[in-house]
Image 1 (cartoon, rainbow, N blue to C red):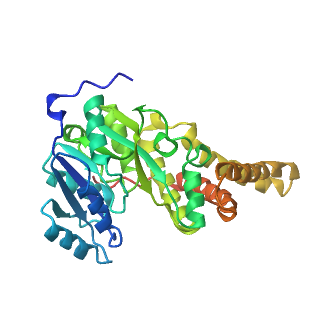
Image 2 (cartoon, helix red, strand yellow):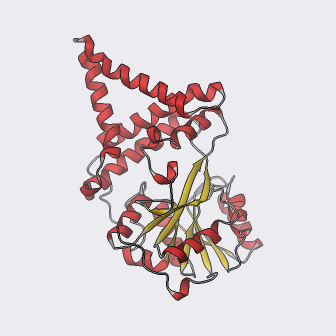
Image 3 (tube, one colour):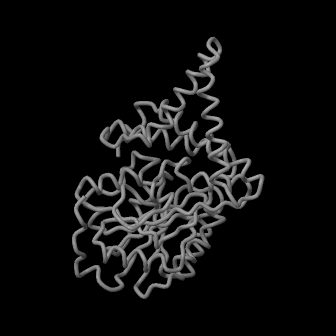
Amino acid sequence: MSEPSPPDDASVGTPPVSVVVPVLNEGRHLRDAVAQVLSQAYAGELEVVLALGPSADGTDAVAADLVASDARVRTVANPTGRTPAALNAAIRAARHDVIVRVDGHAEIPSDYVATVVRTLRETGADNVGGLMKAVGRSAFERAVACAMRSRIGVGGGTFHVGGGAGPVDTVYLGAFRRSALERVGGYDERYTRTQDWHLNLRLRQSGGTVWFTPDLEVTYRPRSSVTALARQYFQYGRWRRVVAREHPETVNARYLAPPVMVVGTTAATLLGLFWPPALLVPTAYAVGVVVGGVAISGGEPPRTRALTPVALATMHWSWGVGFLTSPRSLGRGSA
């Protein structure tokens, strides 16, 4: 990959920044999330654009109060409630050339905006992001966090497991140059999931650079139950298959591992009913998940360590089944 182009003069210093936030049923977290943005240690001008979906938990009242309390906060409507549509609406309404995405329940450090602006300037990248730091509260959430921070859980994505600064395939959230978003037409609104990955793919295909910096850490709160985690990763698998159909050149061993495991383990289990040696395959997978789960959860309380293999297996199987059962009609709606 070629090195990023030098930054232009407009990016020097502390340019004004628009922070865009897709919001749906974030009544519990929105006030704190916006407060973290408005209290950033950044000398430049800031505005916050909230794209409000059809919430049912009082989110709109919280947003209205935030607008009334601070002139830097504005809202736009997102009738569909879908994340890519929310982001596009907020970006269209944003006034500035540096666009920073934040989620309605995000927990960002006080130097987040300053760091992304500096990194955009220094690297010339089109998108900058950092580490999605999974942090759980309950025993199961902590187990999921262990799985999400490990290569055996998520396959080694830099924004999950960390790494050195440099060009990557994708990053968590993201801070963009408006010109880059306009070059690729913004988020593809067909993608209700994996829209970030797909946007970053298009940025890279258009000659841009997506840059990871370990200087950024955003706290992410994992799903709190097996059912919620399974639903999340099932959808991830389904939508990653959509990307694979449209962009077969992106398929690699990391993404094929879960569906191959599902097919192989299921077939071996069925064969084992008639030929017992075949049961070595599912047995080996189970042992691997248990041993791996214990290994990546060192230092955690006993209950979290016991639940980590459950989290790993839920992520693997849900992603794999989602990938295998993804219907061809998915993602074919109009943008």
